Length: 325
Image 1 (cartoon, rainbow, N blue to C red):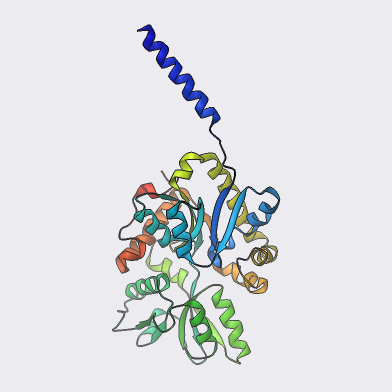
Image 2: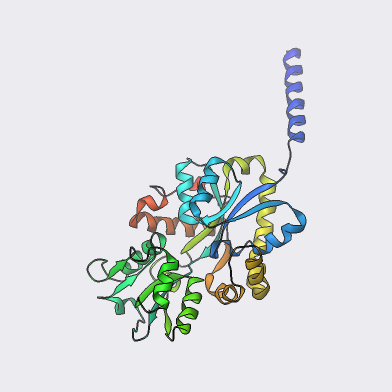
C-alpha cells in the first residue's frame, strides 16, 4: 500500500512539473485574414503587432486558401466567411471552433437610373443579378419569405456575373439594371457610375430586410475561428488574442478615418477613401458567447435550407461554439 501511495505521489509531482513547464504562449500565433470586409476589424491589431510581434498575420484574397491552411494545421486562427467556418468544422469533425462573429450583413440591392425599387414587391417580374454563393443564398431566402418564388416570380441570375467585382463593373457601366452587392463594392460601384454619368441608387438594405423575416441580428457573414487543438494547448493565448481583437474592432468604429488608412497600409484594401465611406455600412462587430451562437444557428439553418453543401452538409452542433454555454 505504501509503495502504491509513493507511486501515486511521484506521478502527481511529475504531472505538476510537466504542466508548469508547458508554455502558456507559443513563440508566435499564425493568423490568416481575408482582404475586404472580413479583414477590416484586424487592421489596428496588425498595426500594433508591428511593435509587439506577438502574431504572424497574413492577408489572403482566397477563402479556400484559408480553409486549406486551417485543415492542414498551418495556421492557428483565421477570419473567414461563417459558412466556410461551418464547412471546415464539419469536414474536420470538430477541428475548429468559432470564437466570434466579426461581420454582420453588408449586402445591398442597387438600381440604376429609371428603375425604382422600395420593397420586394417591386421586384416581381424583374431580373436581379447577384454574386454566386452566399449572396445568392441570402437573397433567395429573402425572396421566398417575401412571397416571391425564384424562377417564377423573380429571376435570380448568379451566373452572368458570379464574381462581385465583375457585377460591380457591369452595374457601374449601365449593363445591369438591378444588382445585389456587398460593401465596399457598393461604394465603388456608385463612384464609378458617377464617372460614367450614371446614377446608382442604394434601394434596399438587405440586413434590414433580413431582420424583418428572420431573427434580428442573425445575418452573420464573417467570423474568427481557431483550431481546436491550438485552443486546447494555449487557452490563455487565445483569450489574449480575443481581447486585442475586440479592441481592434472597437477602434475601427470610433476612429474611422485612421482605421481606413490602417486597412490600406496593411494590405486589407486598396483605397482609404472608399474604405472610410464603406466602414459605417459594413456592420463590423464583435459578437461572442450565447449571442453569437444564437445568431449563427439561425443563419446556418437558413443556408442549410437553401443549399446544404454551402455549410458542409449539416448545421454544426454546439461544440462548434467557443464559450457559448
